Image (cartoon, rainbow, N blue to C red):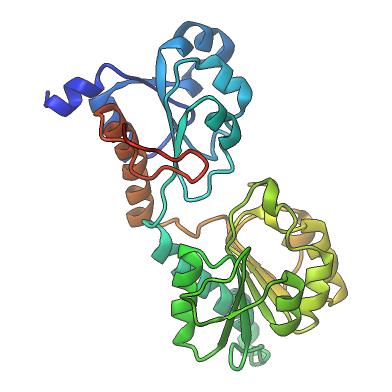
Length: 328
């Protein structure tokens, strides 16, 4: 056993739901790992083991880590969450208790940005529909109908963070107009800034949503924004399902208020409204923006590395803004 593993073995870590082998293997070697999902009587298990738990590895697969779970873990020091978004963790509760929360930023930026461009092109050029058209033998009877285009489109990015910038960089190669909306103007960014979301929607005909989820952005994309986007407008959501008012979007798609949408996320995953599924002119993906073996392994490794670094006295690698870390 290495010195790192010997030090780490003193820590009891709770994994809330099954995670990738790269996470399980690393934490099994370096800690006393407990698997919450293996215990049918969760409350009894937490009463017995909870006071020993000092770290948690979690993901959206578990659901939301809220005050009730924090209450069961009185000696918790750190929560390492899988994903760049961390609205699955009550960070306000964590901060109140002095618990550090980490996420997995940066390692998925390129993968998500690549998928976003693929989803945008698939939605505009109707690539999935064309594939089905060929497979169903319809090409033998008539050419596939002409599609809308990306040419001369005005793209508005909702949330110009690290992934938003990676998307914008790729869009530059397509010769389209790029603008963005966020809480504040970024002085080092050359793209056009819109202080209001409705204002940007009026000025653009594509909205790409890549803002964080959570209460602060719930239904940020609402009926007013969709109306402003207009009948040639396209909505692409690779953020969180909660950011879009799903019923307002369904109504806008049905009525022709906007042209179409490409979605990778939904309000109640993995349940997708049948009304969306029944729409031939939208493109729906099962939350796969970061879903490559390469990127998910990198994310999983960062989940483990945050915990290992913490329990070896090196501090967290990627603490979230709500629970900043200052080394003593």
